[in-house]
Image (cartoon, rainbow, N blue to C red; front, side):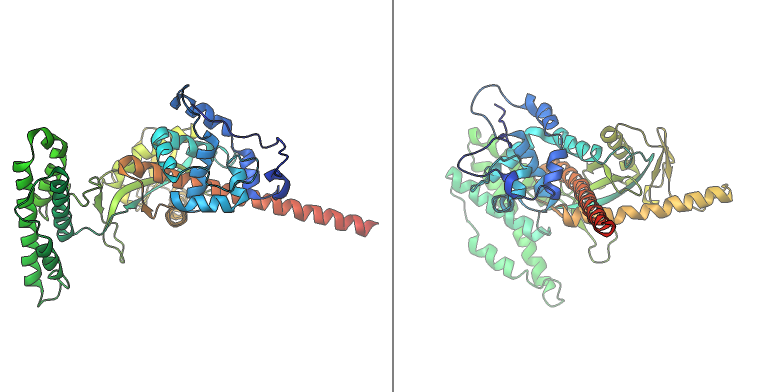
Length: 438
C-alpha cells in the first residue's frame, strides 16, 4: 500500500513545525516547494498494492535518492546526515523534526528495484523540465562518453583463482561434501610467492605459483561436479560453469570475466596517462551547450565504439526533453556517421568544400564541445559516479542517470541561491535609497 507524507502545515502541540525555525529562503527549502512531488506519486502509484501495511511515502524515498546523489553520500551514510540536518528533513516532506532514521538503508535498495530504470528516468525528466523553457530551448546538443568504474578490485588471474578456490570450499562445507584437500595452507603459501611478481628474480617463481593455483581451482570445480548430489547440482551449475569459464579464459580472449560477482564488467581503455584501463561500463552523456544541462544518459555494456552509442543517446535525450535536436556536436571518436535521423553530426575535420563562414561556424561549434568535459568530471567526482556501488547492469544505468539528475538539481540550487542574493541586494538598495531621500 502506498504511504502518505505528513501535512507540513498542520500544527503539533508537542513540537514546533520545521518551517517555524528553519530559514524559509534556504535553497533546499525553495527547491522542495518547486519540485512536483505529486507527479512522482502519480507515476509510481501503480507499483504499489492496495493491501497490506502502508509503505514509506513516495516523496520521502524520491527525496532520499536525490539527496544521496546531490551530496555524494551512500545509503548508510545518508541516514545520520538526514537526522542531523533539518533542511534534509523538510526537503523529504517531514512536518516536525525527527530523531530517528527515516527508513532502513536497505529500503533504498528495494525502492530502486521497484521503480527501475523508467522511474529514474522520470527523476531526470523532472530535473530537466524544472530548468525552464528558456534554458532548454537549444536545438544543438553535446555528446561524449566516459567510463563508469564498478566497485571491484583490480582483476588479476591469481585473485580470480583464489576466489574460485574459496567459493568451492564454501559450497562443499555448506553441502556437507568432504573434499580431498582444502588447500588452505597451500593457497596461503602460493599467494606469498606471488609478491613482487614483476621482479626479474621472482617472476619465474610467481608464474609457477599462478599455474599451481589454476590447477587447484580446476581440480576443485571438477570434484564438486562429481560429488554434488544430482538434486543439488542444479543449484550450483551456473556458478560452476562461471568458474570453469574463468579458468579456461586466455589473455587474448574477448568478453572475459573480470569479476565473479559482477560478470558484466568490461575492460575499457580511454587513453589516460595515469590509468590505462578502467573496469566497468561505458556511459554516454548528452548536454545542452551554454546551459550545461544534462538531457540524456545511456549506459552501454562492453566497450562499443563511440559512434555506436550516438543514436541511443540522442533517442534518450529526445525522450527526456520531448523534442528533436538539429545538431549533435561530438569529437573525433564518433567518426563514421554524418547524420542520424534528422540530426546532423558535427565533428572536427579539415572542412573541405565549406565556405569561410561555414568553417568559422563549425570551428566555433567544435570548440563549444569542450564544455562537456568538466560537466562529466563534476558528475563523476561530486555526484557518486566515480565508482558505482549499485549491482548489475540495471545498477549501472540507474547510478549514471541519478548522478546526471543530481547535477541538474545542483544547478537549480545555485540558481535559487543567486536569485535570493539578488533579491536581498535589491531590498537593501531600496531601503538605502529611501533613507537617502528622507
